[in-house]
Every structure is written in structure tokens, then in C-alpha cells.
Length: 169
Figure 1 (cartoon, rainbow, N blue to C red):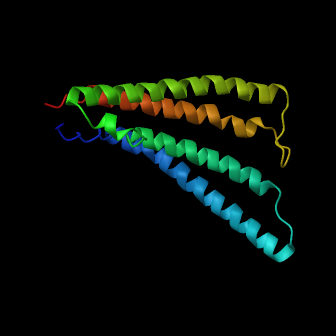
Figure 2: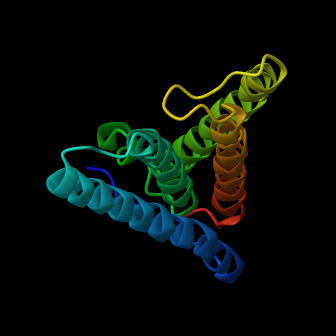
């Protein structure tokens, strides 16, 4: 029988204060989604027309919400994992798996951030416009490399916290 899983490394005071960024971005994205959706419902109800831009902004805000939520989950060590592997075995094995998981998340999102810079550059260079309202597409796509880089930084921070934590007996 394996020993109980140690608690995840709790974020330190600086990490918790910096998580306010993700928390506030989540609040703003949710508020924006609620407001534009409610406004669109009212306009459709009273005029039988709708705002063309609401779907485009809603999709953008949902993507921002998913990435910001992912960043907060990584920083709090609450991302998805397979419990069979992460909770079984010795404390050393569990720690190594946690380190490997944090490292893989960091590598994946670093690659995504680096590769998405090319996407933003192509949107800018070729003058791509959004399909709904015709604004420059890079206004939306610029946030993808920034938010994926934030997730990568959070994962590197988690890796450091796991590595600095004294090994369980």
C-alpha cells in the first residue's frame, strides 16, 4: 500500500500576489462575456437584429479565459493529471513525476508561445482582418503568445517550488 499523497506545493506569498493578475483577467473576461451576450440578447429581442461583433468578441474572450484559467491552474498545481500514476509509488517517484509534469507543461507552452509569434507576424505582415468586423487579426492573435508564455513561466515556477520542497520521508 502506498503512502498518502503529499499536499501539492503551495504557492508562496509572491506567487499568490501575482495570481491576482489571472484572477482579475478572469473576472474581466467573464464580465465582458456576460455584458456583450446580455446586450446582444436585448437588441435581438427588441429589434430582431443582432450585433455582428458579439460572436467575434465572445470567441476571443473565451480563448483568453481558457488560457488565463490554465495559467492559474498551473501556478496552483491544479492542472489535470492521471491519479493512478501521480498518487501511487514512493514519495520520490511522486515528486519526480510532479517535476516531469511541470517541466513538460513548461516545454509545451514555451514551444506554443514561440511558434505562435510566427502566426502573429503573418497576421500583421499580410494584413489579415477578422471575419466579423474586419479589424486587424493580430489584435486578437497577439494575446496567444503572451498568455502561453505566461503559462510556461507559471510552469517553470511550479517546477522550482517542487524542486525546492524538501523530499517527503
